[in-house]
Image (cartoon, rainbow, N blue to C red; front, side, top):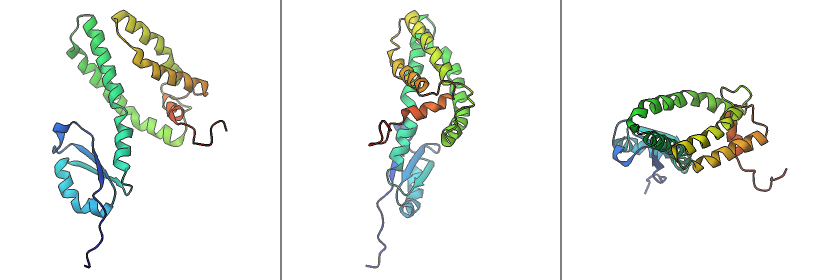
Length: 191
């Protein structure tokens, strides 16, 4: 009696491997009732020190998990492909880690510019165009043949690039792929 009605605990998602739970730099997302989040924030931070409240919608953690997690598997498969290519030449995979790490740092540095282009819907001043990426498709196939690798996992990406060119984005920033990834709203197809 007299107790305030409380919402459920916020929904959450861990952005790390299970063994990282409890580390001070482990990222955890939460969405849902903000008052409940604030009440339990000290406890939640024990699970991961980089604890972020995203907003009142309870599904925000799942949304961000999907949105950010979409980069993981393609990046890992790309690394594994590189590993197989080096091994095909008798080279140790460890010899490419430094270069892969540098490449990830480069990607990290350009994400804010891509996010800005996407948020503005302005793709006309590309650092790297869709056409440039599409031109590499033939090189990917050659590399696969030379190293005796299965590179068919590239085909959906190459198809996406071709669709972007067909949609008029060939000379636009590669971030314009975002527009091609969006499906038409139900009932609006063909309009």
